[in-house]
Amino acid sequence: MRADILLGLQWGDEGKGKVVDVLAQHYQIVTRFQGGPNAGHTIEFDNKKFILHTIPSGIFNPDTINVIGNGVIIDPYILQNEIQNLKQNNVTVENNLLISRKAHLILPTHRLLDAVYENSKGNAKIGSTLKGIGPTYTDKTARLGLRIGNIEQNTFYQHYRDLKEKHLHIVKAHQFDYLNYKIEGMNLEEYEEKWFSSVDTLKSLRKIDSEYYINQCLDANKSVLAEGAQGTMLDIDFGTYPYVTSSNTVTAGVCTGLGIAPSRVGEVFGVFKAYTTRVGSGPFPSELDDETGQKLREYGREYGSTTGRPRRCGWLDIVSLKYAIMLNGVTRLFMTKTDVLNTFQTIKSGIKYLHRGDAIEFVPFESSYERLEPVYKDFEGWQSDISLIKKANELPVQLNHYIDFIEKETSVKIDMVSVGADRNQIIKL
Ligand code: GDP
Ligand code: IMO
Ligand code: MG
Image 1 (cartoon, protein in one colour):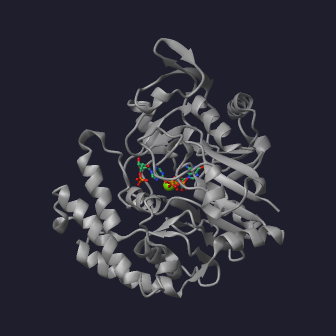
Image 2: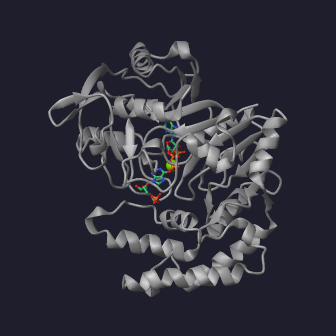
């Protein structure tokens, strides 16, 4: 068996969590392979809403095993809160959550460093979620990090203290007032105490050598779905660098983040919104700073799942969508938040960029720091409520035109269209 992959094709928040939850009934294993609690994956059903940061979105399907892979970075405090919130809603994780021993730990001082680096950037802030993502992956690469498997070793506390000392050295060199900085509403010392008690909770969870586990599952013909976090345009190599996250969010990240060979990759499901959003700083060619952008934000309830920040909104950008499809080898597309466009008279989609006077159809190097001007194609809106539609043959003709256009441009079929936040609001085409 091969592992299927589901990932975001834009700047994150494409609705990956919702789609993974829907697909989970068809998979025996759902696994995260990169990122950390910078992710916020929303799942809604039975009038309940959950936001997952570290736990894979298959957790609501009692028959699915959820694996946090080696490429993920974990903040024990955030993970413990997630588990508690699930427990309060009668979702238990004891039997169906497994954690890689090789996943790295986000230390309290990694979160402090995130703030120090953001603070030092002045006007060039990344707009980080401040969950410690950049500093933790930096320490991983610098071969300084602490991993889940280290928790049970005698040397853990010494290793922790050494790393903390290194971090505080940097913090002090930046003259950062860390004694007054709050993490989750607490000062460093208070947060550290909570963090260590969460590490104790972590000890009781099931830890595995996930690379062996996943490969053995595939050998045994079990179905595996790898769930991406963030989106392709936030990828450390291919995104709008430096306004990106610190991991490989693309298909290639699955191989290193789980330990599976490229030949074991199956379908690649690419999720995109019917328009585009971005939270945090950085270039966004099709951004709308006007009333239309506000309307998208209002109708799409575009506020960050992790930080609550308003998301920047704009039209669908076909050039970057095609770039993302190329990088990931997408085999099927899922379009989400289609209902958000219900009332629009005209819908636009960027089909080219104007770049230094030329019309181009690729994402140039300069897209990282220059704003490209999109050339738009107009579509007639359907101006009707599609949120209760269940069957593909009931979709309005204008929406079918929009779908046909995207399929033709990308040469990939759209498999499902999401028309609302609830688990049931999804139409198979
Ligand atoms: P993720 O990070 O990719 O999992 O996406 P988020 O959960 O951060 O953001 C997607 C938001 O859109 C969440 O609030 C979802 O509940 C919501 N959502 C998902 N699909 C749809 C949809 O088809 N229509 C509408 N209106 N909302 C949706
Ligand atoms: P999900 O999985 C949207 C953005 C941040 C910031 C940049 C770097 O929910 O789609 P970081 O905290 O990684 O240092 O932030 O990346 N970002 C996201 N934007 N969705 C996400 O995750 C994101 N994770 C990080 O806003 O601009
Ligand atoms: Mg999100």
